[in-house]
Length: 385
Ligand code: ADP
Image (cartoon, rainbow, N blue to C red; front, side, top):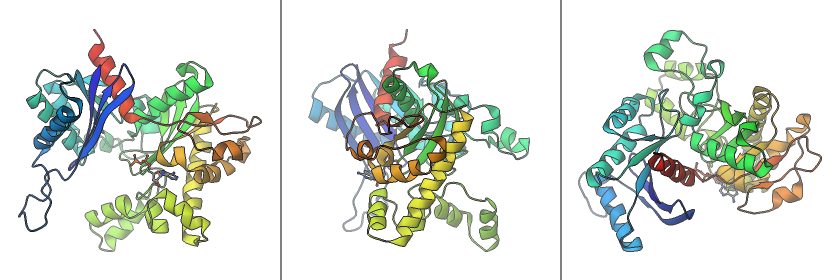
């Protein structure tokens, strides 16, 4: 089954054509600068496609050029916000598209882009089934005491202010892969998964289901990320606001200027580690703050799941940065968790164990693959009778 996986951003469209049966990526690409540079068209200005429909024509042209006359059988969309309604991938109808659109206020940068992508495809290929796979869906199983903020109920009922969690497609996929590596049914997996990319979140998994996660109402909460602050005292926002900062300034500060970038001046983990190793104290401090924060979450989630049976690292940093993994696991000694320095140093694209035999529970590295998970979920929904 050939599935086109689409990740629509406000000015970009990332795509993959996957053969789900053969587990292969046939084509992948990125259309950028959608709707950008069409203002005056001055000298040297790069004109991107006018809108998502025009971007889709470029994708179609690439598919024809590279793959000839293949017949796509379904489209799977990464949709950031599924709100409280969507706990599973769904076949898209016009009613579903409107439901995704109604969630725009909760994900103002992402959901509108998904809706544009969905409508462009519905227009161009009206007979092609489309499936929405939500970033929030896996976290629909959080118990109320985990998703509530301790603020008046009216904020939840009137504005939907609660914790939703993100990276769900990755956490769900890695949960399955971890259970497979440990050779247990996924329903018996209790563990903590750290998805550490530019955005980063940790999830508490009990019986294969998400029971807590560090991102909340938006992806800003929780861990120290590339450019996001993660947890902080909300009174800082009030303080800054009283000091004359605008809402936009505060939003930019916390989402784009903070995290590793704010602490070390660089949002890329690879260079932060290199700078720390070269003796840069700010870089070393940034790593200490980030690893300490994550270790605290792992300790907390060990309690949340009633005793984790594994700690799992995934995504760009989790899969590749042996240095950062070591800094985190060093802080987990009280739980009896021990890293095997040699196994941790092995560079590999395979799922693997990196703890010692005497470690209280195994530490795993599991490569994530959100596009694969979206393609498989799409095939399952479309193939279902
Ligand atoms: P995104 O959230 O954009 O998908 P990724 O999962 O690709 O992000 O992760 C990006 C992060 O992974 C960056 O901080 C990058 O420095 C880090 N990273 C990628 N490769 C390595 C590596 N070999 N060593 C250390 N960090 C790495």
